[in-house]
Image (tube, rainbow, N blue to C red; front, side, top):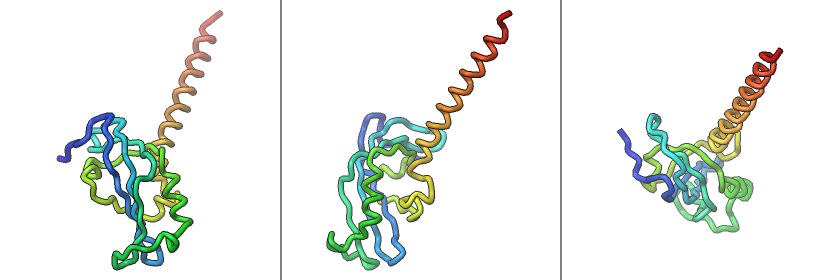
Length: 141
């Protein structure tokens, strides 16, 4: 069973890798601040800091010059800073987490689902408060 290697408040380097349609790979490293643990799922809740390092390489692993980077994808990578997400404990070992390109383009909600869940939870709490207030006012003669 995987164990958390990082405690709440600690930061570790979290590396992501995406395979582009034309064969290149994007790699990006972010500092990940541990906000919480989800032991039942063997996951951390983390917040990504500002992009620390990045590279684009061809299918053979040769580094591309910065001028040849796929700018549309790099803009999406820099937008990941500040996101909160859950990530498996194993991601704290420094190896790259390989993700589908749809996670970067937003077609898959990987980088927003934790925040989406927070928004839904807030909405449910507000609805419960309204319902309680309505039920409380209907008890009055």
